[in-house]
Figure 1 (cartoon, rainbow, N blue to C red):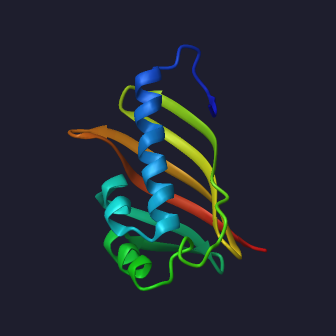
Figure 2 (figure 1 turned 120 degrees about the horizontal axis):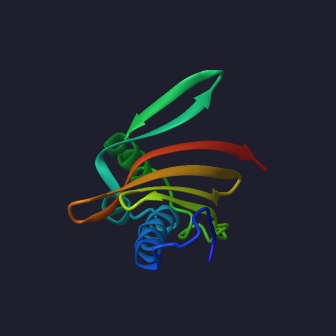
Length: 132
């Protein structure tokens, strides 16, 4: 289990958060936009740095990009998923740091999740990319 930053973790909440993150990672590897849409809130955005500037992408535009590219699973690319930390900041707020990859691009993601009606959802993703 990844590190948590609270003394008495809510194991049910952590399991639910890990399930959402696993759905995200499976969807990313499989190119499955249904899984990705289930993990991300419709109003979520993805953010990164590009040439010293903030790059922002709405969830639906990102899903369209995922649909239009070859998926890692079909290409036989290995998975590099690893949850580094889950910080359960409260009963409705969590931050997850993880590694994943679509070789040759390796990512570090920081996901913000909120517990909303219907359960935990990713509401924001900030990430960095490293080429290897």
